[in-house]
Length: 215
Ligand code: AP5
Image 1 (cartoon, rainbow, N blue to C red):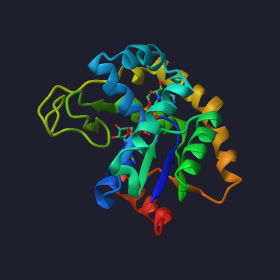
Image 2 (cartoon, rainbow, N blue to C red):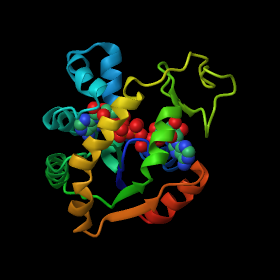
Image 3 (cartoon, rainbow, N blue to C red):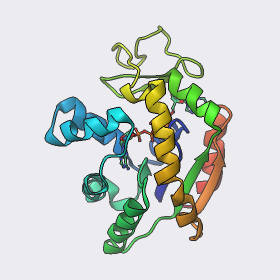
Image 4 (cartoon, rainbow, N blue to C red):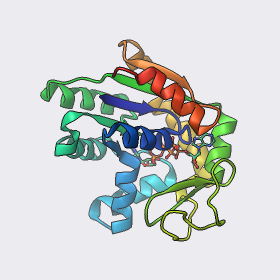
């Protein structure tokens, strides 16, 4: 299974991708997670990426393509992959296509998570993330057992820097300008599948399985 999860910030790509990866055994690579990890470790890549991420802008295509090239070259990715948050520009989609051609493989499906903007804003405002283990919660739909504390490792939960209201507005604009055109790009191919990603996490997962079944 070679999958791309595409959708605006807060549409549930990470939540659903995590479940699908756990159930299918196919590894998930999320460019946002890889970049946040580099920021946390203070690597040169992380230091460079941080200013784009904090501002809600996209990290340059060649940087992100390099990360995906590395991820797809790992042994775990040999039998398939789930890409979350990549590609996000037409140039990234072209780069991915070239990478897949080098490997003589192709995408089985690009799943688009469709969510109304008010719901995206509500989800992002309510998201709380664990800086230690990466677990994600939501004060509205998936609160931790003890407010502000990670259920998995007990660390104090944080609001992501880029989930602040003014940065969310920038991210939504950047999505419309740079990522939405991919719907037409992949729509010309027969790989695009749309999921109305509203309802409970469980309900959305059922819809996701229905469109990737057999991939
Ligand atoms: P990234 O981390 O990829 O952020 P994003 O795409 O904006 O996506 P999010 O993580 O915000 O949302 P999601 O769709 O995964 O939703 P989630 O499942 O968490 O990127 C961050 C930054 O890194 C970018 O701005 C950019 O700077 C850089 N970057 C990353 N990739 C790049 C690339 N390819 N090129 C260039 N730059 C790149 O859910 C959100 C919340 O909603 C959670 O709290 C969750 O619990 C809750 N939730 C989920 N599903 C439901 C549901 N069904 N009902 C109610 N609540 C729900």
